[in-house]
Amino acid sequence: MLGSNPMAWAAPTSKDPFILDFTPAAITPTMVRYTQRYGGVLPPEVAIDVEGKPTTDPSKVTTGVSYGPDKGRQTDKGAIDPGGHRGYGMLLMIDFLSGALLGADMNLAHVTKDKSNKGHLFIAIDPGIFGNPETFKRAVTARINEIKASKKAPGISEIRVPGERNCRQRRACLESGEVLIDSICWDDGVKLGKTLGVKPPPS
Image (cartoon, rainbow, N blue to C red; front, top):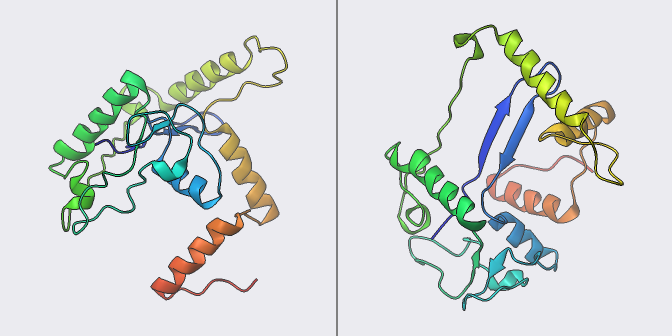
């Protein structure tokens, strides 16, 4: 009854942007699908089976891929945990903002309704409306630096903020000219490319 409803926030700084991208749910359907593909197990306490019991078996959890206008709702699989009462509330609020507010379909209608209308809400705030944008960026940067300079737990060498690791990885990829992609993800992309008439680059 609840999708993973991902959301993202971003703010400019004097260096790399602060980027927070997540789903309120305990895990994503994509993670369940790829755990199945890799033959792995789910972390504990992120999903339940069809009987409502905790499970780490990804094959017992719905991923949404079997839904469709002609298939209806999958009822033989368990569900992803919404992430507690806070996640549950946020998942519903995202439904309201990107669905009801925009006049778009919500939840199961995305997969059970033919030609469903899926909505996405984007909000951009110009810091210049409230003052000097550079002052905002300096204040955000100072706050991040304050966090990173705070006391660390034993064995921890660095405190990172959301987006920092990905920005470093992006720079490294640009410098090396290479992006590492695991074989299963690559194979999925090649298969999709064939259906779209797109040839993969020579290996």
